[in-house]
Every structure is written in structure tokens, then in C-alpha cells.
Image 1 (cartoon, helix red, strand yellow):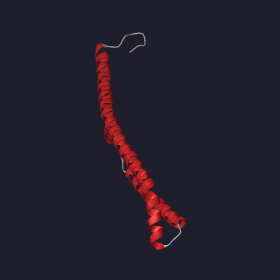
Image 2 (tube, helix red, strand yellow):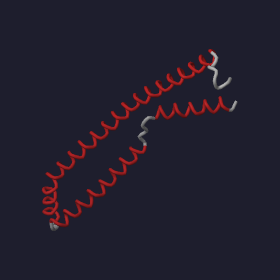
Image 3 (cartoon, one colour):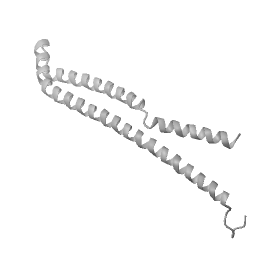
Image 4 (cartoon, rainbow, N blue to C red):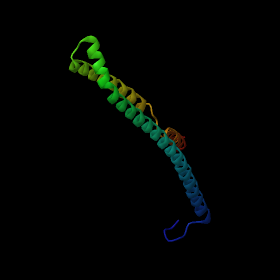
Length: 133
């Protein structure tokens, strides 16, 4: 084919078919990405909301209960209130560390857009098989 001559009709038809196939492929991947994006957003909002509510309830509860608990322990064991308060603070720091480690392991196991990545992997494998028979 010379640069000045137009392509043959069958070449235009095959190019149009290829463009249509690519457009359909991109559309399908876009829909999958959209669906998984909505699912990921829902999961993250749910986890975030639960975390904020639990954290707020714990903080308010302990702000109300801690002074009374310090007083009760100090009276029962005959300790000075400052020692009881420091022991309580140490226990809270340890429990908080354990909770954050648990949250870290849950976030590590959270897989977003898993199906999209799986489909991309399958596409790459398919293209590799067709490229190198």
C-alpha cells in the first residue's frame, strides 16, 4: 500500500472491528471498576464509621468512669490515687496498642478491587499466550 492511496475496504472493516472490540473491552473494564469502586467505598465507610463510633463511646465511657474507678481502687488497696491513675494509664496504653495491631492486621487483609486485578491478570496471560503460541 502506497502512502498516498486510501486503505482497502477490508482493511478499514478490520480496523473498525478492532476499534469496536477495544471500545467494548474498555467499557466492560470501566463498568467492573465502577462496581468494585462502589463496593470498596461502602466497605471503607462502614469500617470507618464503626471505628469512630466505638472510639467515641470508649473515650466518653472511660472519661466518666476513670475517676470513680481510681478512687475505688485507691480506697480499697490503700494506695495513693496517683499510683492507681498511672497503673490505669499503663493498662490503657497496652490495650490500645493491642487494638491498633489488630486493626493493622485487618487492614492488611482488606483487598480492594480484587476482581479487577484478577481480570487484568487473566487478560495479560491471554495476550501472552496469543502473542507467543
